[in-house]
Amino acid sequence: MDTGKYHGSWVIVLSFIAALMLSIVPLPTWAVEWRPDWVAMVLIYWCIAVPQRVSVATGWVAGLVEDVLNNVLLGQHALSLCIIAYFSVQMHRQVRVFPVWQQAVFVALLIISSRFPELWIRGMLGKNTLGWAFAFPALTSMMLWPWLFILLRDMRRHYHVS
Image (cartoon, rainbow, N blue to C red; front, side, top):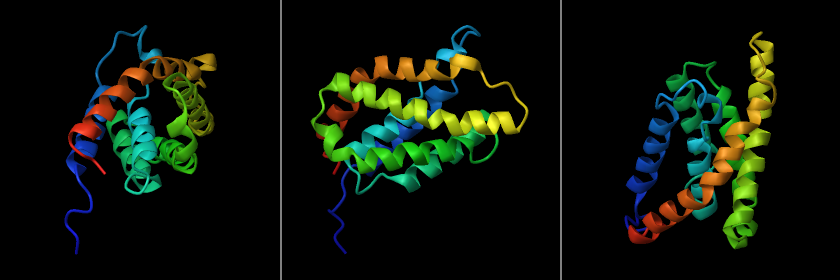
Protein backbone atom coordinates (compact mmCIF):
# COMPACT_ATOMS: atom_id res chain seq x y z
CA MET A 1 0.00 0.00 0.00
CA ASP A 2 1.36 3.37 -1.03
CA THR A 3 0.84 5.74 1.90
CA GLY A 4 2.32 8.69 -0.01
CA LYS A 5 -0.27 8.59 -2.77
CA TYR A 6 -2.57 11.25 -1.33
CA HIS A 7 -1.37 14.29 0.55
CA GLY A 8 -3.28 16.88 2.51
CA SER A 9 -6.56 15.07 3.15
CA TRP A 10 -6.93 17.09 6.31
CA VAL A 11 -6.94 20.32 4.25
CA ILE A 12 -9.95 19.07 2.27
CA VAL A 13 -11.78 18.00 5.42
CA LEU A 14 -11.05 21.27 7.23
CA SER A 15 -12.23 23.32 4.24
CA PHE A 16 -15.55 21.45 4.27
CA ILE A 17 -15.87 21.95 8.04
CA ALA A 18 -15.23 25.68 7.62
CA ALA A 19 -17.82 25.84 4.81
CA LEU A 20 -20.38 24.01 6.94
CA MET A 21 -19.71 26.40 9.81
CA LEU A 22 -20.15 29.40 7.50
CA SER A 23 -23.43 27.95 6.27
CA ILE A 24 -24.95 28.10 9.78
CA VAL A 25 -23.54 31.41 10.99
CA PRO A 26 -26.45 33.60 12.12
CA LEU A 27 -27.14 36.50 9.76
CA PRO A 28 -29.52 39.45 9.96
CA THR A 29 -32.96 38.65 8.57
CA TRP A 30 -32.39 40.77 5.45
CA ALA A 31 -29.17 38.88 4.62
CA VAL A 32 -30.39 35.29 5.07
CA GLU A 33 -31.64 35.06 1.49
CA TRP A 34 -28.26 36.31 0.20
CA ARG A 35 -26.13 33.75 2.09
CA PRO A 36 -23.54 32.29 -0.31
CA ASP A 37 -23.60 28.54 -0.81
CA TRP A 38 -20.27 27.93 0.90
CA VAL A 39 -20.47 24.13 0.87
CA ALA A 40 -21.27 24.06 -2.84
CA MET A 41 -18.39 26.40 -3.65
CA VAL A 42 -15.90 24.33 -1.67
CA LEU A 43 -17.24 21.16 -3.30
CA ILE A 44 -16.91 22.69 -6.77
CA TYR A 45 -13.34 23.75 -6.08
CA TRP A 46 -12.21 20.34 -4.85
CA CYS A 47 -14.08 18.51 -7.63
CA ILE A 48 -12.24 20.64 -10.17
CA ALA A 49 -8.86 20.50 -8.43
CA VAL A 50 -8.73 16.82 -7.37
CA PRO A 51 -11.63 14.97 -9.03
CA GLN A 52 -10.06 11.59 -8.26
CA ARG A 53 -10.53 12.31 -4.54
CA VAL A 54 -13.61 14.51 -4.26
CA SER A 55 -16.69 13.64 -6.27
CA VAL A 56 -20.37 12.69 -5.97
CA ALA A 57 -19.97 10.63 -2.78
CA THR A 58 -18.30 13.58 -1.06
CA GLY A 59 -21.17 15.79 -2.19
CA TRP A 60 -23.67 13.33 -0.77
CA VAL A 61 -21.96 13.19 2.64
CA ALA A 62 -21.49 16.97 2.82
CA GLY A 63 -25.12 17.43 1.80
CA LEU A 64 -26.37 15.10 4.51
CA VAL A 65 -24.35 16.98 7.11
CA GLU A 66 -25.73 20.27 5.78
CA ASP A 67 -29.27 18.86 5.94
CA VAL A 68 -28.80 17.99 9.61
CA LEU A 69 -27.24 21.37 10.43
CA ASN A 70 -30.01 23.32 8.68
CA ASN A 71 -32.81 21.10 10.02
CA VAL A 72 -34.35 20.37 6.61
CA LEU A 73 -35.64 17.23 4.94
CA LEU A 74 -32.83 14.66 4.97
CA GLY A 75 -31.38 14.40 1.48
CA GLN A 76 -32.48 17.80 0.23
CA HIS A 77 -29.03 19.40 0.13
CA ALA A 78 -27.45 16.01 -0.54
CA LEU A 79 -29.28 15.73 -3.86
CA SER A 80 -28.31 19.26 -4.84
CA LEU A 81 -24.66 18.75 -3.95
CA CYS A 82 -24.57 15.45 -5.85
CA ILE A 83 -25.76 17.28 -8.96
CA ILE A 84 -23.12 19.95 -8.46
CA ALA A 85 -20.38 17.37 -7.90
CA TYR A 86 -21.37 15.34 -10.94
CA PHE A 87 -21.22 18.28 -13.34
CA SER A 88 -18.07 19.67 -11.71
CA VAL A 89 -16.22 16.37 -12.13
CA GLN A 90 -17.54 15.87 -15.67
CA MET A 91 -16.34 19.32 -16.74
CA HIS A 92 -13.24 19.71 -14.58
CA ARG A 93 -10.81 19.71 -17.50
CA GLN A 94 -12.64 22.52 -19.26
CA VAL A 95 -13.30 24.58 -16.13
CA ARG A 96 -9.64 24.43 -15.06
CA VAL A 97 -8.59 26.44 -18.11
CA PHE A 98 -11.34 29.07 -17.73
CA PRO A 99 -10.34 32.46 -16.35
CA VAL A 100 -11.60 33.01 -12.82
CA TRP A 101 -14.51 35.21 -13.92
CA GLN A 102 -15.77 32.45 -16.24
CA GLN A 103 -15.38 29.96 -13.43
CA ALA A 104 -17.53 32.27 -11.29
CA VAL A 105 -20.27 32.19 -13.94
CA PHE A 106 -19.97 28.38 -14.05
CA VAL A 107 -20.35 28.30 -10.25
CA ALA A 108 -23.45 30.51 -10.40
CA LEU A 109 -25.04 28.32 -13.08
CA LEU A 110 -24.33 25.16 -11.09
CA ILE A 111 -25.76 26.62 -7.91
CA ILE A 112 -28.90 27.89 -9.66
CA SER A 113 -29.44 24.53 -11.36
CA SER A 114 -28.96 22.70 -8.09
CA ARG A 115 -31.61 24.85 -6.40
CA PHE A 116 -34.43 23.49 -8.59
CA PRO A 117 -34.67 20.12 -6.79
CA GLU A 118 -34.74 22.04 -3.50
CA LEU A 119 -37.58 24.22 -4.80
CA TRP A 120 -39.43 21.12 -5.95
CA ILE A 121 -39.03 19.49 -2.52
CA ARG A 122 -40.17 22.69 -0.77
CA GLY A 123 -43.25 22.77 -3.02
CA MET A 124 -44.03 19.12 -2.27
CA LEU A 125 -43.82 19.86 1.46
CA GLY A 126 -46.19 22.81 1.09
CA LYS A 127 -43.60 25.45 1.99
CA ASN A 128 -43.23 28.74 0.16
CA THR A 129 -41.06 28.58 -2.96
CA LEU A 130 -39.11 31.81 -2.30
CA GLY A 131 -39.83 33.39 -5.73
CA TRP A 132 -36.73 34.85 -7.34
CA ALA A 133 -34.89 34.80 -4.00
CA PHE A 134 -33.73 31.27 -4.83
CA ALA A 135 -31.16 32.83 -7.21
CA PHE A 136 -29.63 35.21 -4.64
CA PRO A 137 -27.16 32.66 -3.19
CA ALA A 138 -25.89 31.99 -6.71
CA LEU A 139 -25.19 35.68 -7.22
CA THR A 140 -23.32 36.10 -3.94
CA SER A 141 -21.43 32.85 -4.54
CA MET A 142 -20.42 34.11 -7.98
CA MET A 143 -19.08 37.33 -6.45
CA LEU A 144 -17.12 35.49 -3.74
CA TRP A 145 -15.79 32.71 -5.98
CA PRO A 146 -12.54 34.49 -7.05
CA TRP A 147 -11.44 34.99 -3.44
CA LEU A 148 -12.41 31.49 -2.35
CA PHE A 149 -10.70 30.03 -5.41
CA ILE A 150 -7.46 31.87 -4.67
CA LEU A 151 -7.58 30.92 -0.97
CA LEU A 152 -8.19 27.21 -1.63
CA ARG A 153 -5.70 27.10 -4.51
CA ASP A 154 -2.98 28.60 -2.33
CA MET A 155 -3.80 26.15 0.47
CA ARG A 156 -3.72 23.24 -1.99
CA ARG A 157 -0.32 24.31 -3.31
CA HIS A 158 1.16 25.08 0.11
CA TYR A 159 0.12 21.75 1.66
CA HIS A 160 0.70 19.76 -1.55
CA VAL A 161 -2.83 18.40 -1.75
CA SER A 162 -2.93 15.88 -4.56
